[in-house]
Amino acid sequence: MLLLHGFASDGHTDWVSTGWPAALVAAGRPVLVPDLPGHGSSPAPAGTTPKAITEELAIAVGEVSEVDVVGYSLGARLAWELPALLPVRRLVLGGISPHEPFGAVDVEAALAFAGGGRLPADPLTAAIARMITAPGRDPVALARCIEGLRREPFAPRVGTLTVPTRFVAGRDDPVSQGIETLVPLVPGSDLLLVPGDHGGALRGAPFRTAALTFLDPEGRTFT
Image (cartoon, rainbow, N blue to C red; front, top):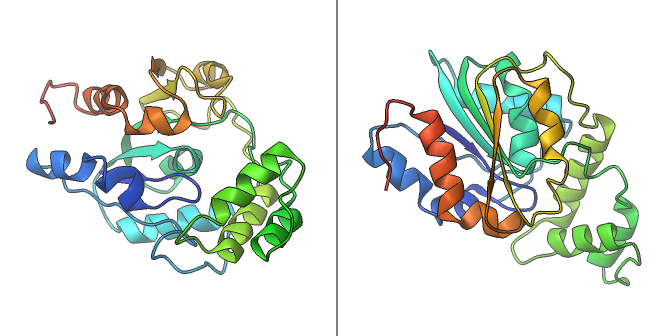
């Protein structure tokens, strides 16, 4: 199983600290929890487009007969591309925006704040500026990731995904507003709403239950 974290986070924060790998390993599921390029312990990549990042992820996974993927936020946006590169069996996309969330970010203003300048007046850019300057983050590497994502904006189309897919979103999550428009693009997919905003939904038990019951339809439980 491959777990992909969100922007300006890392594998430990989004997955390990919330108990996902421990529960999966105890149930006999091998788990890969990478730090995305430019995040956590992963160095800034040479290529920062979704295509470049997903190709690196496919290399990291290696030769497998099949893999289940759970992605959250940015991780979900990248996971959307993975069935073209890996034998994905089932896919869970949590907290995903149906639009390109970084399209309106003023990267230069965010970097100026990181260098000691004023907080940008634009609310979205200000939120991103705070995220990339959080303790332990590399503002320059994260800004490069934003630039790469902007070069290949998310444009979901019907027929891109054909593997069984579950969408999950927090009821109070503004990031995933409009996620229901993605369901008709993926045949046989469904959408579950869980309590919480963007961060709260990720950390809550209902999201994990929604994801793991879909990934294991034979009924095994994960604690």
